Image (tube, rainbow, N blue to C red; front, side, top):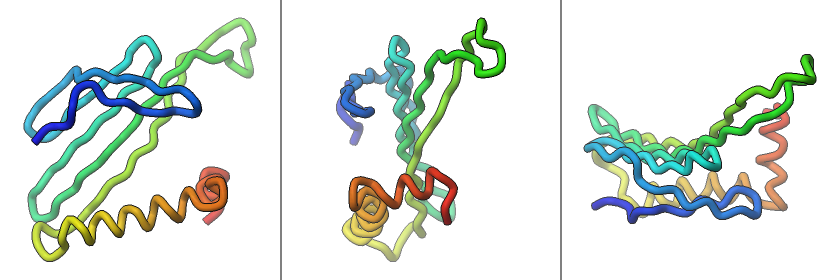
Length: 120
């Protein structure tokens, strides 16, 4: 079963609509090249199943060392769910993933901001 096309990704207060640009058996890529957003969902199964969801963002920003030059910058955030092929139910994997998500976003995303800031 495939995800619907297009997908919506909210970055800050902006909802970005990303249309499917690549579709193959192991991954789908959704893009909004005008706004520099790429959304990728993939799943590989060998000895273990690795499912990932990734958002990439590109922007043009001034070079802090050469103020007359703008540079293309990129950043990404992704979640990987790694599990054996059998032994865990979808519900158990959902609960595990939600536990991480809840930890990151609790208290106005305080833990996520700490991690981004380099705390561990």
